[in-house]
Length: 574
View 1 (cartoon, rainbow, N blue to C red):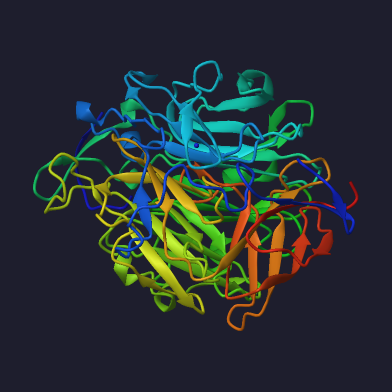
View 2: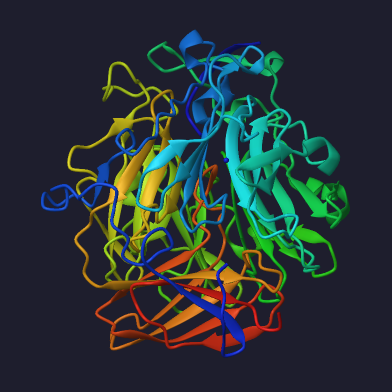
């Protein structure tokens, strides 16, 4: 959060065997296909809007609280709150988990707890927090999901200011807080997190991004150029932190191997994390966005050691050689040419940034995407690429909200509020900005944003946190240009095969006939996302072939597949 400040002082299966892989087509109510939404679609799409806000009518009553009304201007307040789309009970319907903040006196006190909502697969949700075991009262920031114990259901890890929480999914709508016995509490200000098998031993390890080494004792008094009290930028504190890697020992416990693998070599003010095999050696690498400091690219050497190669490879600072205020981040192949890119959000007066890779080297290519200049007057947090209109090209949603006071205010009762943004993909990795995601712009202080198909109709919906306000749920009502197909990938043990790379080849489509995605639920900002992959297919008539590179490096080919359905594939050799 880079801002100019004067400093005055201190103070989130059904199965059948087909062609050596488990493949299931899911359709109808609850499991996928053309399920009927809970309510009929409104005229929002007729007005040109791609989304309509439906949180209250669909059963979501979560209200985020962050302590800001006390006007302490403590920096953790301005970015707090996380959200997750995940299927906790394995019924094929996405559920929602909202991460609360509360009060910093002490952290995690005050009104509100985290909330869990069960989805019905048609876009409706019911509060099932009571008795679930996940109503944590820590000062929450982020959340990630993954099956760390290999029992086939998704577990929850909540990143807090102070001790984090690991909730083991016991089935039947019950979770158990196993933080102490698992050894993954930490005591930092944590934000992003991700489950990934960094050592390829078959179970999911845990990477946690930490921000400042913060306490109330280091707080400072900052003011705008108009003399108004405001939040300080992280760089005012000179208290960067280091990130944490917990190795899964396979017996319900984790070991902190951060020092052993080399993470203390780079400190920062981290927010987001993206994971993929960026250098082609099969082992997951981690990219961390830092706020006002160079970003980090942790390359694995395959022998349990990591080296920050961001400066060397060209993805630490922007094309002008300047550090930016890195927030949300996502791995994406914008041109579908097999080369990964990294897109990240930033503060006002910095553009959001897109780094493209080729032959192992990264370059700032923001200007050619159309995503740069239009973002300069906003502060981006949550973000996600998805084909919202199913034309076969990725689109982009960005959740915005200020971190510093600027005049004029867009809402007198919410001084950090500003509108969110929606971009339509036009091909070749380029985008046009649309007027607004919704018919009437929703102006608020948006933070974490999660992406998933909440009603199993094949298109991607959005749930996001507005700071100090009610949660928002955006139903996708975009006019559809073409069809869709979706996939859930399972490893040999039946857990989601995080880190798998999918290459989809379509029949009957001349433009962008191939699409490439990596399966990772942790992207955006402090959010967890749908564990299924959705593809818009445009005018294509069928999937010609799906090629999967599994986390262990093995490969398999599948297809053809019927459009308009979710298909479940399990890694061959089960």
